[in-house]
Amino acid sequence: MVTLRGVAANAHAGAVLLRGEHQPVYIEGLDDWGDSTGSLLEVHGKLVEIEKPVPDVESHGIRGQLLVLRNARWSQLPTE
Amino acid sequence: MQKFLVRALVAAVLSAGLAAGTVATASAAPAAPATVASAAAERAPLAPALRSGQRTKDWSVPDYIRAWEKHRGRTMTEDEKRNLARGCIGVTVVNLDREDVGNPPLGLSFGSFETARTVQAALNEIVAKKPSAAEFKALVRKHPVLGKLSNVERALPDWIGSGEVTAAVFSKRFWSGDADYSPNANDQVNMSGYRYVPRPGYVNFDYGWYDESVNNWWHANHSEPGMHVYQSTLNYYSRPLQDFDEQVFSVAFARKY
Image (tube, rainbow over all chains, first blue to last red; front, side, top):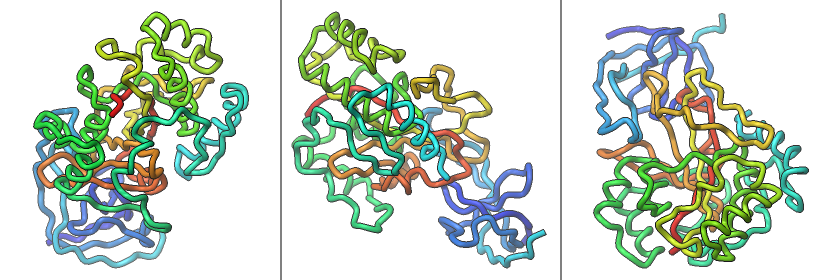
């Protein structure tokens, strides 16, 4: 289990946590952050790497390795 | 504010000179220019329009295929089903129904929906006359809107008669990779350098097929397996997402049905 801090943002494949220049972390099971979009969050969960193969470069999807947080729980942090 | 809305404002100014007789607006669902109705628009819609206040509807692929087949009055071929399985790009490809292109042509891409609709209407006025290839080029050259644009003369497929096609609109959202996709003075975007490269860690693109009969956009979550088709408003389809920093509205000829 890990605890990550970052900014709540929305991507085509679902809600993500942005951590500066690091790879985005997808929050499993969450499509959109809704009113929390843009908030600074502390998120706790199990971090896993998932390989997302796409049949060819001109098909629709994510290619390569994704970071996904499972069983995520979060709390909002005060704005810095 | 979504980039396309900003561009719509710019396009409204440009259109004053570019599209004589057309009223361009900055709304997300602008009034269509006076257009030659496509054959598709005269049929019952593939699906009812979204209810007022509904932003999107999730369709399973089998349900979408059933609705598509009922709308078109024919079955979807195995080749079309393989194309559809590519995700959003497949939705646009099967609706273009072109044998000569693997991917949706991007030669006529614009910064705003309003400009794309103006170009669509102009092209449909021309193909309604069923011109030969040479006549099509001549009509394009002397047209006040089309004559100022690039790639129009080569847009007409050469494997099918001009009377068998209709100009259609689709949109593409994508990651620029810091390349410049700014519209030129005619609101046209040069997509010749685009190579389908995604922002790392994100979805590579999202195509939206414009269904003018209900003013909705058809797109998808991703390719198979696990593909879903979405019917959305323009605002929902164009909502801010980390994956994309550019959006164009493109015009291409589709086979009439």
